[in-house]
Image (cartoon, rainbow, N blue to C red; front, side, top):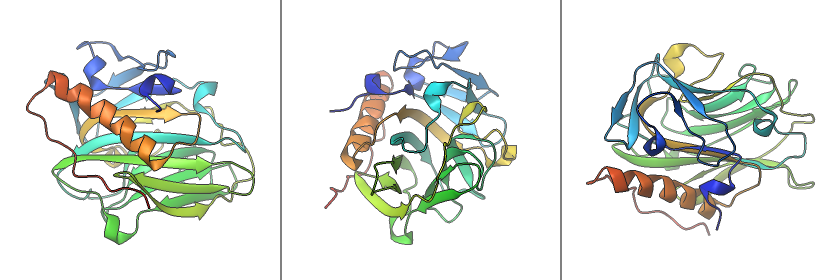
Length: 241
């Protein structure tokens, strides 16, 4: 089963020393530098304010993906209501739309979106309204890009289920020279930063299954529970049919 050590990069607040960078749990050296002053709660999560708080990871070829590369992103968080506007959970892009890069977003209607772009063409997938993210409990989001010839899909996962696979229309590399941000985006207004608890995130250079995304979220939340009991459990997960 896939684990955080298999990731291209991974970050867990439980690894934060209280100062300096949030270390890359994959061991690949893509440490995240804290910006702003979020509350560091019990060594388990950061309480992000939705404006000035985010983490910045230096640009690196490991974090860019080519025309036919499959990859996956995972984010684990907690919020109390739908965002007032779209919020970025994770992004590495030149700007939103058709520009090169990728991003994982919480949408203001309570759904989510995984977006990729090649500089000319953009593709995205969104939750149907019946699968809105839960509030007042830990949630996991996964973004999957299947670059396999003949498949070429972008899709979401949440709670162990894959949603809304959309044709990947990109025809060139997604690579760009921008830094990666956790809980924010380099080009969006600060008000589009994620508001809520940040428990962890990871990027994998392979296509994960919905069950594997769920397993990664479990690894992140189990680590947090070990340092901060009692701990809110994630809701019962559904099995992909």
